[in-house]
Image (tube, rainbow, N blue to C red; front, side, top):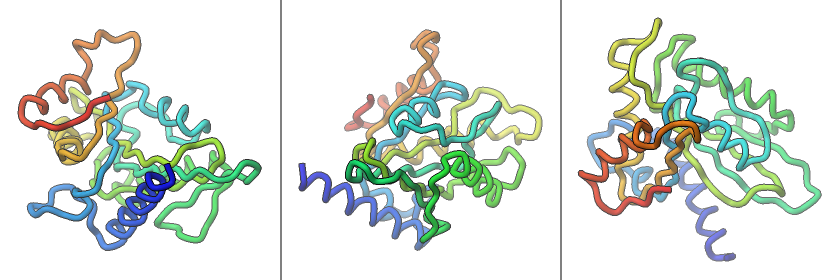
Length: 212
């Protein structure tokens, strides 16, 4: 167990270093170190419940909510288990050295940092946001929350948004070392699930994925 926790910590540090150096996969034509690292990608349609699942894992409400595309940049969520009795706090890679203890402020910072790159439009960006949460109530784990899959563009979105999001999701989940956490609402027929539909197409093309 100690060896596994050490490995997760090493992967976390390498991911952070890659982001600082501008290596975060995406549309790069060449293999990158980021893409060689193991990852767990969270995939689902818009309003599928991805945020609720992630918040349940953390035990805190901290993700932006709203209609349409709320997640417009990949969120690399690194969870670090601390000793019992220690105060929970979070740190953003783009605001290093600043600790956040108010989770409502964390939510606002995710939104503000998203807008900083994408503007207040409904555009998306491959540039990830790195958020580390330190808490005695989590396990050592890294998850990548991706924009929700959609079927139609709405006002303020380019017509290409449907394909743009699918391409972004593909760029993360088609890697053989990616574990895919596919989220589907309990009240939806799994046969019509956006996440499962995309994964079905990928599985026909790529071998070696683990889908949860």
